[in-house]
Image (cartoon, rainbow, N blue to C red):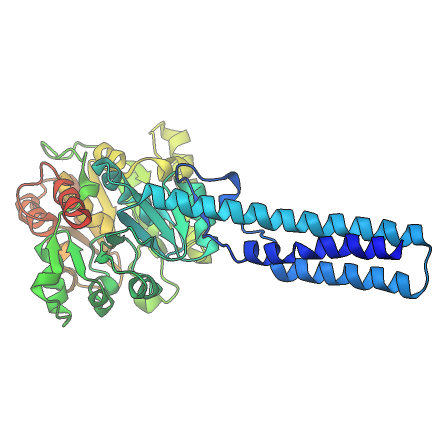
Length: 453
């Protein structure tokens, strides 16, 4: 009986050679690739060390029963149970290895030639560029830096996504977010690495030396190139490519002056935790909105998706939402706020508005394509001319100074004679890549084809 028990146990342990081999077969987390096994996005793998520990405990237990001269039937029963347990773990390792090979094969079969490596936090930056990559018909994927980012993006998009290194088949990698962790992607891939960014603006980090690590830097227009020079960042001409702003596709340019009363899109940027670096109007948002309401305007309030950890900003957003809700009930005006306003496509928000009030933000440059009046808040400036001198995006905007002294006059001009209309026309060409903007996504899609071929 003892010999039989030991034979059963030895047979179970003999599977250890296969278990070790199978445990060494690994694959990255992956989702939405054609042909993936169902377990491809799961991280709860059985490790060989765990199997080895369980097998060792089983052996010790059986040998211990033999040494204490336990009943033969007990020794045999424990040996059989232990063998089945070891075999079950071995089977699981085998299945994991099979799935890992299937994941690798699915990625290799799909052979993405384009990738968006992503090491950001909010995920929305991927969707800012993905529609036009999709439109090329070229196989592509998202590459998440961490498992947490992978699971977030896999839930947000149906795009093929993998976690870890850029697949070897990728020829061009586009970066919509300037995370410092992008350096790890660049170091481990021979692809052409292209910085996209997620908007063109006068924010301090828009002209950062960090972009120099990329092989190519795309910009919307000449304004971005001049911004690098003004900031003392020398970017070799061969690294720069003007591609316009695909995100302006679908914006309908204004054909006349704003009606009275007007529909106003109020789209403040997020409030910085350090007020000395803040460019947001959220600190005075209630005063701006109340002024618009007093003028009979319909307000579409679209908060920025970032900055949710700033308690004062969140309190102000709630306050503005209440102002709009109360006014809508009292006047019947169809104001928009909250999730409904946030979830609407930005292009629809631009097209529905007659003017926009915003801050130093990428949304300002995209709105230039509408040719509609623009009002900007100068968070750190009490002088409008000084603000325009430091922020070229405000050249064609009506400026609300930080002390709100010019709030009334800025809205008077934007909602009235609009004296800066001709300036905005020139500014749009300068920021958005020239006068030929009928097909704003064409140059980006041409670049995708060029670099992925």
